[in-house]
Image (cartoon, rainbow over all chains, first blue to last red; front, side, top):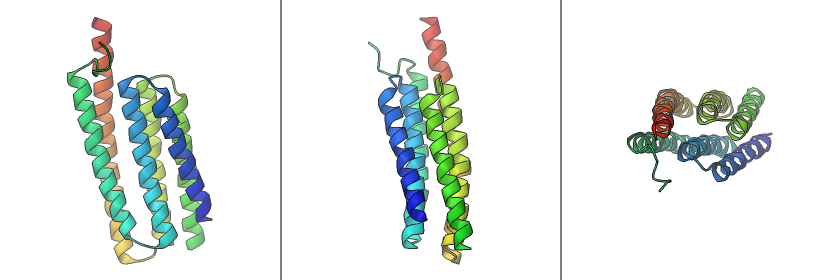
Length: 88
Length: 96
């Protein structure tokens, strides 16, 4: 049954990667990267359920904090440079 | 209990897929972000609740509570910062 969870999380990750590749705007790409980080946290939880190893939950907490810092950092960069550096 | 946990995890994973479909299909940055952040918060919360049933130990429960608190604190804050950035970017483009 946990295998179903793994497949669903994999499908969600694939959709996040497709979204990242499809969007051209920097803000949209950050949204897609944030969504992919959520999928990665879901994958950590799935791995914890598969193995019964609680260390994966620690990895998920670390991932959540790193994703938060990355998103806030990129948002700060976008806010202070509205072109996002992706336009001449 | 393991069955309940597994079903909760499947439900959370389905919510995660729905969130990603929303990110992919919605028309603009703010609505994409709405889909991604809100649904992912719920999805990961439900998956964490399911995991608490699957791995029944005190250490796991403490870590899961920590994870859920971290998610509930960080995801809305990151979403708010990104929304501000997206709006200022749109305003900047409108001024040009």
